[in-house]
Image (cartoon, rainbow, N blue to C red; front, side, top):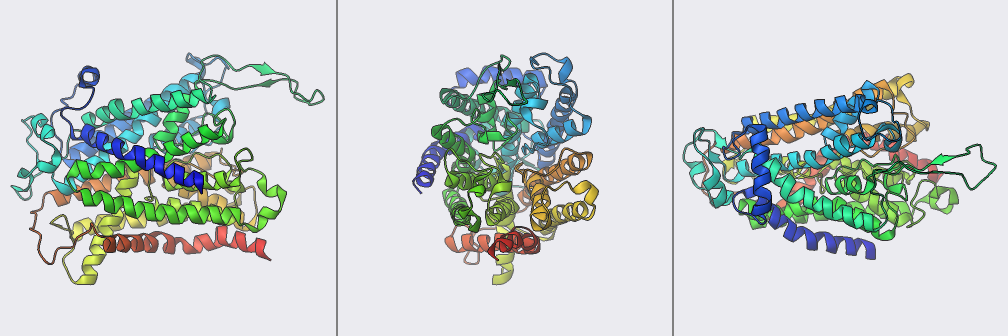
Length: 583
């Protein structure tokens, strides 16, 4: 309990000022350390050949997002398949097979970091530093840019002027705008994608990564470009005569993976490896990194859009769901029937205790992080079930940007349902939620069960491609968890699953993409539709979303649309697995 309270106090205490700073960065105009950052930003804009002061419609913003992902993804895919011929490969790591390289590229491009490979054995230093860490830094900021643009559209998007600079308007702040309501049906200015990503990366993500990397290096996480040493095993009679200890620039990757809600480890077993997570303090620093930016983003909302009570509603709702999930996860693990058996500690965090394993598993699935300090496959069945529910909700804190984007989807659905229940026209911030917007929301809600349950059913129906290491109910959990994790852009998995195959690589790559891009672009499109509408003045019939009553309604919508519709799968997996231990 002490660890939980300390973690929460640190996350909120640091997240509040970080959120306000992030809002200032994303509003544009003058910001701290302009003398340092502005020359670098201008150089990047010249290199890209773009005018960073020109606003974009939601379509232009989405196209820029898609283009940047396509170009970066192609470069990284080629790098993985040619790493043996590139520099910074002192251990002689061979090229990746094309399907493994494709899955790895899509996984890190979608900010998921699901790994069907072992990092220290199958990626060179260059691939780790440029391909992996590069995506771990940039892709979270792409998600952040999308959700910031969506917030602009939902609150006070400006009219697009194809010939005029928006620099002056940006300096004034988005929440002060009134001209966005002047012409119904006109395209609106959602900001500039390239400027948003560049500013967030340079001014926010990279400084935090530098600080976290220094803290982890201080705690003993390796940070070197030298090849790892070879040592003789302590047991002279062992068949293995020599063991090579893999090192490398580990701490920068660990910093980026935790802060950016990435999760992919330098080492295959992730932060369960002592080199990646050597001390109790490094364990706390890494868990703090998991939740820090998602919490900071909730505190960014009010200063960014000028609705302080909206921040309170979002933060309070997420905190309520987080407390329920964390408490249930730790209870399920520490009170498991199997805990009486010493063998139950297999795969757990023996250095820091089982409670730390349960706490980490709860937080890493509440956030789209996916890093582990213990094997989730070794957890009690109900603990694994809680982790699955966290990923199905996908908005308890959520990943950087994409978590709040998913929360906005639930918010819009709750507005629609609340309007129907009270006999009022559903509207958000004065704009009516009508048939086109609801159809897009329905598309997102139906996509998750169709993809996750569909691929789970196909995989379980064909034993030759399933690859489970456990029979019966736990085997179902392994498959269902893998696809749930891929769609939620989480990346953690039930280890023991034979996922390094063509089927798993290609099917998961598709699920990764379907879980990432529609979830980001569709809410942006809805914001684009709403931004074109006339804003109705508030009256006695206006639905206020910034209230505790609406927050509870939103939680009920989350429970109904996620947990209940997946109850059969949960019953066949973790719940049935748990019941086999009761007899």
